[in-house]
Image (cartoon, rainbow, N blue to C red; front, side, top):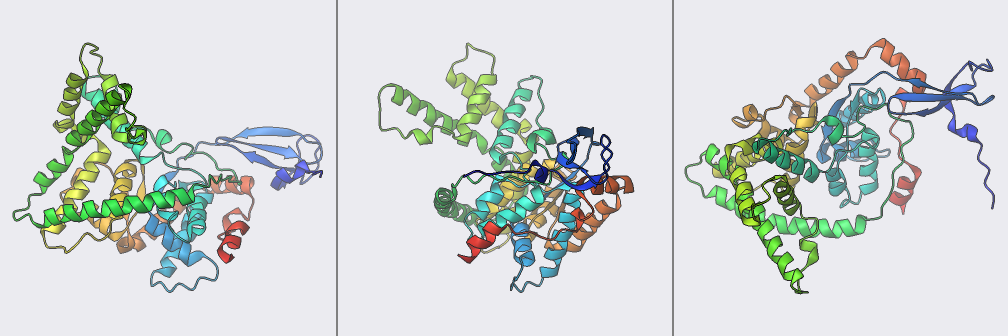
Length: 430
């Protein structure tokens, strides 16, 4: 079977007069790149590229709670009766508009996938966060955390290094002009991941229950004591994990076939300690002495300079205070994911929309004054402030920028409605 594809289908509106053949309404947009775009004439095929001005997009992180509720309330034929339904619809309209205007980006993350894939509405949820991220994704949280810790260790060793990554490293392409086309690749890993995540959640639930009961038993609660305990908890965790790995490696080399290789390969704590050991230039030190040096760092006050670790420990201490004050139980095991996301991505965001519980943890003292970043935090409790914040961003857009967006994408670009790809609708109706 032969397929004939007319290359003109790749040339899109808006059309203008071709500078070469001078035909009217033939010179369309072929592609939009990070910092340039290309036009092509569909008559004489004249092709030329043009530079685009640099952007300064605001990064807005939307947690799964926000993604899920926007999806429910903007999906056609939705029968969901939500008292905040109009807010979610309005928020989506504003976020979508500003994203298409190229002044904000709402990156998705592995956590969006992880919390969506277990839902029966997975395809809808994915379409929602991909619509607002346009394929721009944060680096995995573990990758960022590893960089923070290893860089902090190098700095402690008096080596030249920085602890905070640039936004471009954490969120590659976030400041690019986005093309109109988005290509998503389905790796068909959903079933495997659902099973793994279900097991992980059950295991985590029992650990958190025990920890919460311990916090409830504290009679004289001291925030700083709990905070420091959490802060220095990495030492035993990382060192013991590496020693276990080291012993298993020796046994494997000695011919022991009963070692589970999956426990060794890809473990994040082992990788971090290994990279720290590689950073120690004193070759004469044996493994034990190098581990002692790493332990010294993990137990020193400089560990508080690690942004994701400091923020996470502050939030956990805030939860411990609630438990000691009489809270009956931890609200939801998903708090673990929430804290991991917030602590890792907050340093790189202009704003975040998160749930009320986490927003309250961040606003309480002494947490708020110790975070160390100016990221704006919104939740349902401040939903009107969030809409005003989005309006303020829109007000800052110049007429010159607006005209350029229309020139690139067409005058209907900013008026588009929420689009559900046909394959999603088909799957939902099966």
